[in-house]
Image (cartoon, rainbow, N blue to C red):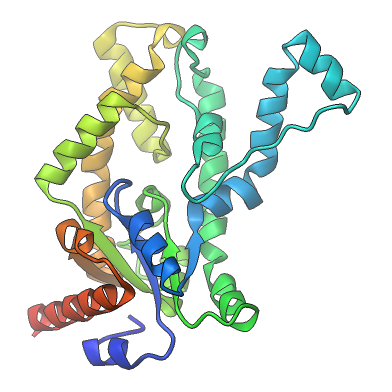
Length: 290
C-alpha cells in the first residue's frame, strides 16, 4: 500500500484514496464531502457514462426518439439535439442504457442485447479505472488539488481478480491510491435489499454469474426469456449479487488495501474526520498483522 502506517498517511502532503464497496454505503456521500473540503473527486461511473459510453447512451435515446414521427422529423432535419445529462449524483442515463433483461413490453431487453451492453460496461469500467492515475496528475498539475478521492462503481469487484497478485487493474490502482473498502453489516445488507426491492435498478454482473442466474431464474419461474418480468428478475438476482460480491470485496481489502465499517464512515462529516478514520484503520491493520 502507498501508506503503510497511520504516520505515513498523516504526514503525506498529497493524499490519494479509492473508495469501494456496494452502492448505497457511502462512497459518493463521502467523496462529495471531501470535494467540498478541497479534494478532487473522480467518479468512475461518471467517467463511464461520459467518456466511454456517452455516445452509445445518446444513440439509444435517439433510437427511441426516431420511433415518434414528430421527433423523427426534427432529428432528421437537425432541429433538435438529444444528449444525456449525467452528473455525479444522477447516473440515470447510464442505468437506462444498461437496462434489464426480459419482456420488451415491460421495458426489458433481449438477453443477447443485454449481454452485449454488459460487455460494453465492463470494458468501459476497466478503462475508467485505469484512467485514475492520469486524473491524479491532472488534478495536481492542472488544477492544483493536493488530495484526490476515486469514487468507484459498486461493480469494481466484478472486473478485477483480487486473488491474482498481478491483476492489471489493481496493480495500477494500488501503486497510486490507498484502496479502502466500506464494509456493510448484515443490517446494512438487509436495508440495501429492501431499498432495491422498492426501486430495482440495472446492475453490472460478471458474465458467468449472469448466465447462471438467468438460466436458474428461467428454470425456477418456468418462463420463456421474452416473458420474464425485468424488475422481477433483477430483484431476484440482487441478494445473490451482494453475496457474490462480498468475498471479492473482502479479498480486495485484505490483499490490496484496508477496510472501514459503513457505520464509521457514516459519522464522517469533514475531511479531518476522514483523515482520522483512515489513520485509525491503518493502525488496526498493523495491529492485526502483528
